[in-house]
Length: 150
Image 1: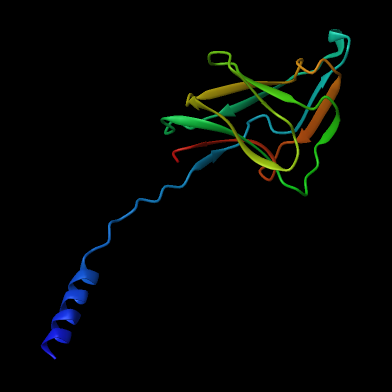
Image 2 (image 1 turned 180 degrees about the vertical axis):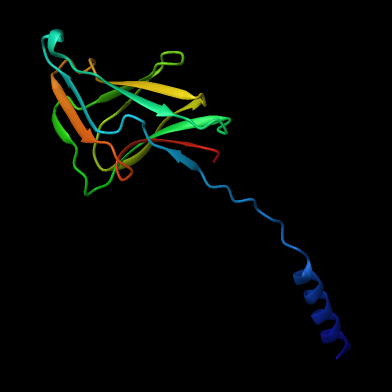
């Protein structure tokens, strides 16, 4: 009887100890300020190439990293033809180029230091040496977005 009383007291003492708290942080999301329909193309004749600039206005409370993402739900088909590899270049940084191929995805592209205005240039990759185009509307359900404060 004493043993069971001691066991119950010990278990009660262990479960009464406060569990460590975990701070949950949710990301803040910013969409491009120039939302609309994005269209990039590359042809054999460079005179007919079309690139797309994407601009994000980042709130002043954003500190640390701003992460660029691209999202196309499975129900959302972008317009594609030929070479569909898209390159992103951050115009305010070191010139690093990131690539993705549109399709059903929600993908992290790259991380950058937050600044008030963040501009990216999207082009069709020259690496494949083929013409092609990619087009998609930009809205909160699909396209590009930046997260910060995660």
